[in-house]
Length: 299
Image (cartoon, one colour):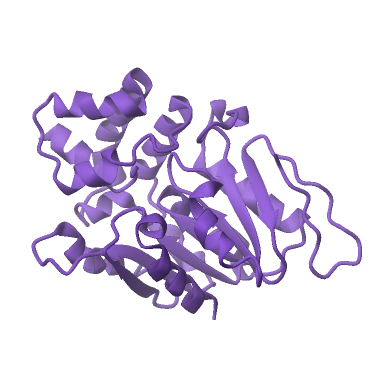
């Protein structure tokens, strides 16, 4: 039972050089940005969009979307150090999502970015919520993609951080011990039928991967940190995008109610957009439909 719940919780999280930026309004270019925790690739001109990837993904997860937007927008593709093939930097110790949010906020201030749109996937969606809560009206709008302010609430809305912590610690230790690829066979060895969880977690797990220390820390934080008490601090409008299926027997068919419950603490009601035919990696699995949702979000 414990392994089955851990597998379900894992399923909500996985799927699978700093660039100098020219200030949009200022007559003098902003200084080059350097961080020991994040990398930012910037291109294009126009209103600013900051993309934050999910657990084990880099900024390249957003590339197909960014390629269709950088003729009208200035896009900023964030990568947390230690994901993919990047050097781990200061993410070798301490927290992950909190420091990453702080560095994105510093980036916005130092690069003199005015009210950007912030789009985050999975763990990156949680980071986007942190940034919006911290910066208030400095953020123009927020989109979270297949993400929740408290991931365990997608399994059971009554779950608390204290209840999840032992399972999160188990997941942390398993990732450190086995790594992201071997974790699949270890869970399968317990004879657990993961169904949708198997599709969401393991088909893309290791697609980009990363340093197992960063993956383990990100997994632990996403499972245990409850951002719902901070939703009241977010003044920017929020859009929630998620993968959906018409099949009434599939778990994804029933996600919207759980998402609505999770985001009900926002000062203004979130907008919910379901992307039919997508699962966790919405922007990769249904790129055209996702791009259309982003364009509606930006309009």
